[in-house]
Length: 405
Length: 193
Image (cartoon, rainbow over all chains, first blue to last red; front, side, top):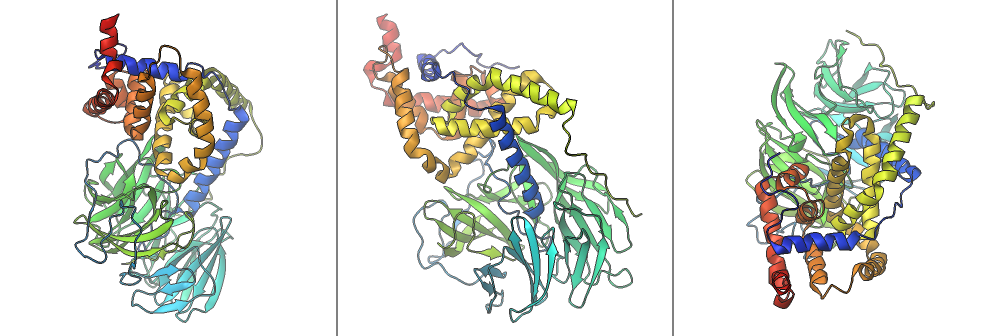
């Protein structure tokens, strides 16, 4: 090992003083307060939470919603090498996410995507629809809403018409995911069947799935029958085995052997996947299944979702755990190099959704203010606050973004 | 190609291998917990917080026990998880506040216990400065000056460059020189001896 300055050979007396102080500070600390049962019990909780995170983590391919409260930790590589995003020049909307000053009169419209706020469905066109209840998550299917309730990890999927009325329901192991143009959704029913639905039909693509398995992405459609449009669905397994791909020809296979979780599909079929996991970080890759080649691999970031044109990806630290990531980054789509990031001080990132090829919408929670905010982060490094609300606690978001295409 | 249903792992019966794992882990826990708690305390400056990150880190070690092949590197593995946890938890200010009231009482007691006649105020000043460091910088000085790791070893554990280790240490020492009264400067004390 290259010891530029070996241990125990401090040349500055302050260094020796620091060593003495540390030794003195803890020299009487000989306790072992944790029992094996304490540790194992905590381990079982962590394992259970990881399974829930995998089950509920990935919401959409086209909707590109970042995993909810899955992962976090700024990790050790989160230096300030990349400057934080600057604020927008807009005098009325610009708010630095690192500034704890409470915001006032944040605009409540102007998003390029739909979102839920309590029981209100704010559509991208500016109209609103009142729903019967506040949903855990949702995706749009044409002019309908496919919304999910979550009762202790048990999902119920409601198909909701444009007027807000529930027209169908299904119990599910996983949340629905849409294709790029929001014409097909896929989810796993509680009977273990991979179900696809579109405007006027539905078909099962495979069965034998279990609680903890989830849909990672859908491509093709809208009609998933082989003789019609056909589609392809990626499924992640809660036990960490390789993700599978099921298509309308009845083929079910593993196409990315080294992947442990698919996070997103691009419109052109590229796959962002996690390939390794450890408690000190993870590695991810972008893979091109058509060519059978890896576009790039990174151990410096987790990959979340492709921008609509796949020129960029959203992502965060390679080490992720806890209530949510400390920042969200925009990465170059061909190299994984970080372009810019948004880091709420004393807060965390709940989800992020691509609004258009140039802008990422980011939901953050700010502990000091007890406030949820939505920021628009540009690939050029600019950011502006577009929504805020003090309703909901730190794990109950005031806003649920539905993604864009 | 239609694939058959995937086999599921067996559950419900604890085999000899699992028992051996638990025994081995328990032995490690007994042997190393006090030392790891000391490091956790220095990283956090808060006894409750230290126990919290130690429990989480040991739990993650337990889950990964079979994968940590090199038993000599287990401490380093736990240290790295603790540092990651501490950075993550520090960012979540609510957690810190949750413990604040109780920690104040415990820490003041701990402070009294470790202060001795030799201390003329330097150590209090030094500890305050350490506590004011951001968690990543604090991890650097704890690894360098408590764990006695070299600059390269510290950089390796933290996944940062040696240059960053040097600059973080330099900044911490500069803060000490600036904020500790001149008459308590250890250089002067050495000269007096």
